[in-house]
Length: 357
Image (cartoon, rainbow, N blue to C red; front, side):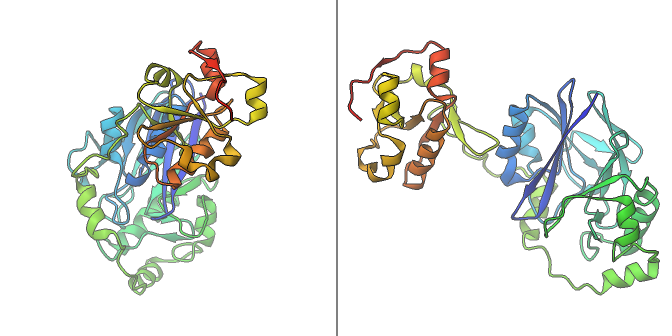
């Protein structure tokens, strides 16, 4: 049984989110999801055919709002964190020494307080990976000047829990702001400027006590929201004109079968070239033919009274057509998944290309 592993990133907060899954059962766990990235994460879970079992918080975050509540609403996954994190409405309380099982995979819970009281790290011993949240960062560590922070406790957490792991253990932190994605226990024990290279408790505490960092810019929003699992006042609005989904690449798509059944409710914009329509002289019934290379100059020919669905032979170039329309003010736009190739495969209705391009 192999571990399927993806490291995801939120540019605005510098947060890493981790998706782990068992390659046989396709059971999955997500660690530290970000509210604004929940559609991206759900799309990846869907594309990989995974069943999300758990959404785990390494602590109550101050720099971003979690997507845990939204993911639970959409997938039925169980939310989990430590009792000391102070998060309300959790499905599972995690304690040191316990294990999170998903398929044939196991994450061990390590108590690593100090940045906050409720910080935990998650160790996948077989894969040699540890997810350290904000306790141990790459060449750094979590700050300890708010949210019950304690430099002395963090020193103990890192030196007694994390630095006792094998040197080869890969370190995956909760954040990085300069493009570093992973490290190792051995590297950090030797090279971490705050706690590596034989630094003692006095060295470490003095370093952190003199950092004088500004508070995280989202702290007043993030902490109160995260106490409630990131539950919003109103759920994000989903497109209600069609069963639109967002792919991991960020593409808004709608199934060909749905479009075929609702041709009187949408417009279909076919962006193939004249050469293509001559070679394949059939189109979706009623489709408007505007080649992609002419679209920006012919926006006035695109109707505005109904939602627009875009199509080409394979469904690739029509993605760009949908982006062009969206950037030009159309808000009800989606690409037809799989293009005409999908339309042909599913035996959906066609008509001759009677309209000149």
